[in-house]
Image (cartoon, rainbow, N blue to C red; front, top):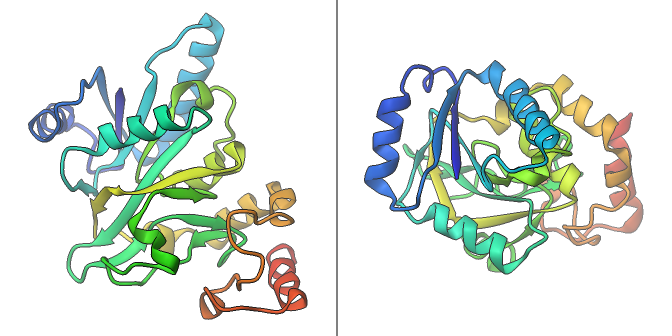
Length: 249
């Protein structure tokens, strides 16, 4: 596994971050990188291009961890590997981010069409909440996962759309894969509200490039609302269509 730490707090801390990894998990880490926020997308694009040109693998899995995220426990690499091995078509595995001060969920499984375009239905809920039919406590398919704590298949990265902004990288990866896997056993603590700080223009870029996916919204029941006010509430078909249309106006 290649581990990529990114964000301003990760720059220049490769030795410290490597020590933290080796002290918390016994999973074999092959390489550790540290990048600024702006370097992440170009680095992933370049590494994918190089790997494709050689027709070989760099690392079978690439873990993305933001420098402001503290991962809970050391089993997360094994959990990600388990999902990839159980379901060979898996491209991306991600988890839940919660704020340590009040244990509120900032990001978890995201759904295309929800919120401003691809957001977490359980955002703002208390950590430990079961979620809709207990889904927050079990692994399941979603449209996308947070890029702040996720594991991506290196072969998939070669052809995936990455977008231009690290904050929406998870949604772009999910759009390429047509689904991602959420697991509560990839759990990170952070004070940074990444999902809430995505700009309207970044969301607009994502939505306009993936309008075809809005017609499906396949990972969320077609009978549920797509706004925070209507999450997990039944809505009529016309209201559901109106909520989809609002995203592309």
